[in-house]
Length: 217
Image (cartoon, rainbow, N blue to C red; front, side, top):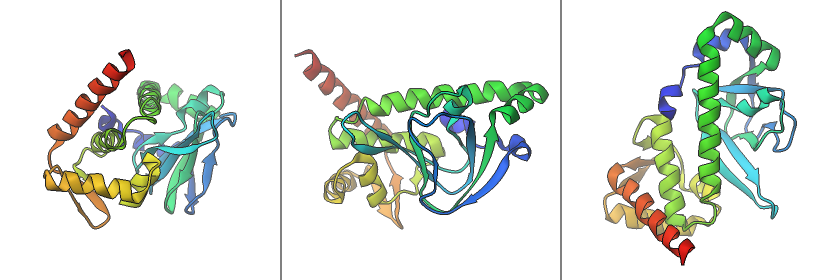
């Protein structure tokens, strides 16, 4: 479903404020009171959260074509921190602008709510896996990117993947090598190519069952 939302906000960019931002620009911080949202037109944005223990983790990787910070429209604190990973072009929409769009375009409100619901669901799902085995987290993240991009070509480096998982590049490298031997993936040009989606999904199912069994023991 997530890929179906990609680029769907394009018709409403004429209402937004275009912003050309450098790498590592902070769009909003976790806990900061929201007053609007953004659309990623070019570049990538990392979504981070700080746990109750004070540990910062990347929990999402947003490419062009998607909304971010939708919870800001509710005028409640943002649930995460958003930082540009590369030089990026975004469009900012204030609460007032959003209301104007919805008055002129009935479908905009439905599209926005679908995006918000999807983000909340995926964030909760990702947070629930933060203490899971590294292989499970990798499979979950790459599977999520597969649906987000609508492609088996995922332009993410091993370094970025390690930052997302919150582990060392060595740990990521070992698992990627195992997957290469099993012909689940290919790695080249700072990208990961998923060769066997069903096997990636099976990792999620198997590890989820093991975690569930351990929880009930």
